[in-house]
Amino acid sequence: MDLGTLLLMVGVSYGAGVLWYDLLPARLPERVWRVAAYPFLGIFVAHTLLPAVLPFDPAFGGLRLITTAVGSLVAVIVDWVITQARHPAVVPSPEPRAA
Image 1 (cartoon, one colour):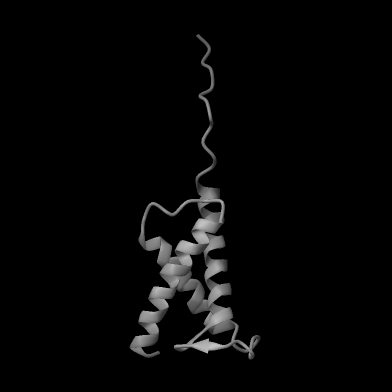
Image 2 (cartoon, rainbow, N blue to C red):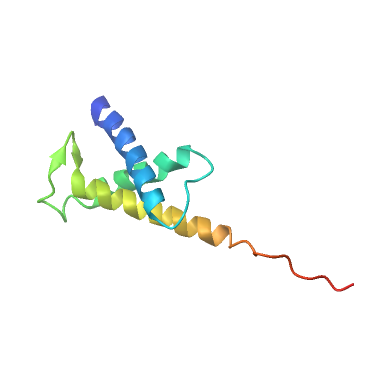
């Protein structure tokens, strides 16, 4: 992997993370690095697994466009599901206490 491809991947993963986190019914994570970390990992895994399945995928700067979009979206959905499972919805009003 070239240094330019790595830097492009970091930039694309951050941009895709902001896009997918805003489109999903969630908010951006409290820690800013998670916005780029999960899509980066998803793009890396997708580029490892999907090139044999998608031979028609156009490339730009060493990154395949459809593979990048699919990998980042799947990674953000996995992070969103894990976050929702770990932090259940907040109760809108406190339960009444027996006096």
